[in-house]
Image (tube, rainbow, N blue to C red; front, side, top):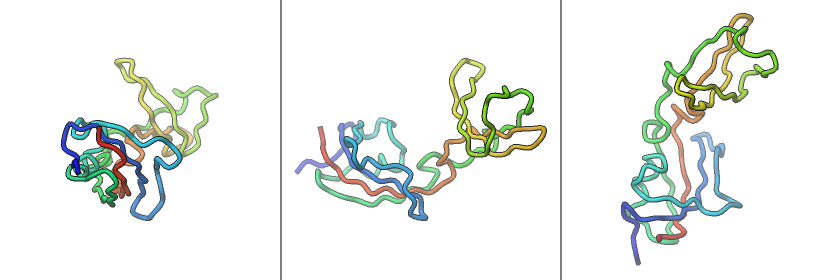
Length: 142
């Protein structure tokens, strides 16, 4: 049988969980995820787990945060004056907002702290700093 190698287009079904067992993403009930192995389209720790697999193979892959969404970067967290945020924007902890970078790019941020004077926004990926586990099944090599 054909084995996955870098440069192949593959399709996988997957379930991603945190190490406590809680699911953060899954392809269940959707089409398999299709991408080119080794192209950087998925997190590095998952990309390197695929070469050598054959269609129908299943695997459990544990991925350290450094090979997933990276470590938490304290510089991606910023306190902004509360009066600088329009009154109609909800400011509960956990609220996802979008900011605009100086070059006009949209950047998702999460409200992580609110007090009378400031709102602390975090632009780290929600899974940054977390070790992950993926249950994968190779569906197709194209």
